[in-house]
Image (cartoon, rainbow, N blue to C red; front, side, top):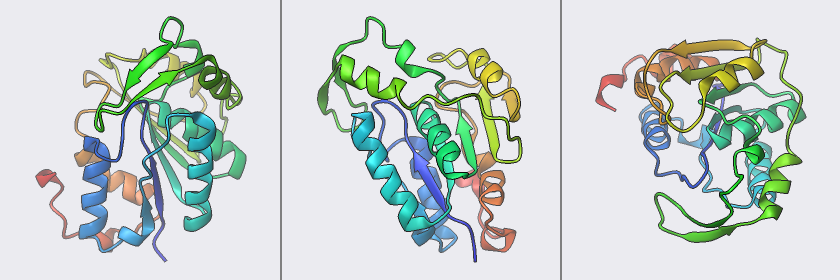
Length: 202
């Protein structure tokens, strides 16, 4: 039985992000769409967590793939449920990054506006967990030219995990499509499911 994947997008992002769309397309070509969930997360962390818990219940024991703020959510859920996680330029202690950022926000994809409040920040703080210590359950993919987050924070926090640090790139993570075979393998999806896929087309 092939593994399953729960993709967790970042702050003010959506399933329309480049990485999410590439992953959806690959899973469709592999005939494994039923093994993937890419929820459109509510901006409030408590509601987002309810959505993610529901997706985990549907999939069983998915690989959690979290980008940016989604990496923070994935870490909390991986520790809570003993799941594997693959984190892409993950946010560390995001509640500490919102100083001076309270107020109106806009989703990059839907254009929806909403208010970032102290309650959002407090809800994020409640999700913080001690630094993971299990290299077998965590892969952390970082690019050093991330313009949004300092990759060195994640490098320190996840130092006991399997780190993949690439020079250059950006916050969106350049070259993600080329890394998808590694992601699928880590999720427990056999090579036979994607051997015929040309990943250079994504």
